[in-house]
Length: 94
Image (tube, rainbow, N blue to C red):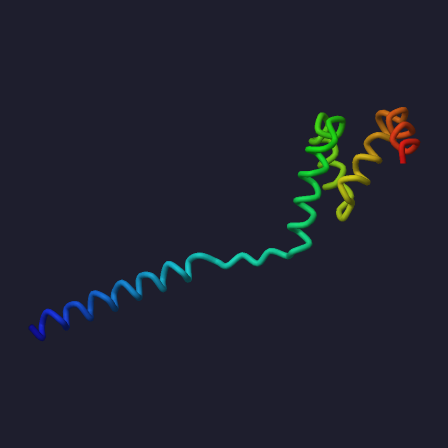
């Protein structure tokens, strides 16, 4: 009986060590709230703006070129370079 309980203890210790080792393998990811807010804003921007949705790749390329630029500013820059008539229309609606 004692041997069986000792075997159970060893088995549980082994499982615990295995679980701990797996936890160490997984690096905890710390995500900044501002990053999440930016991503949500970006998704909503493209969802609500069909013109921007058509050129999403180009807008993201501009954002990567000018780090820290908001999606709205990148879209305005894209319009200024490629479709100035749409930019003037957008600004007149503001």
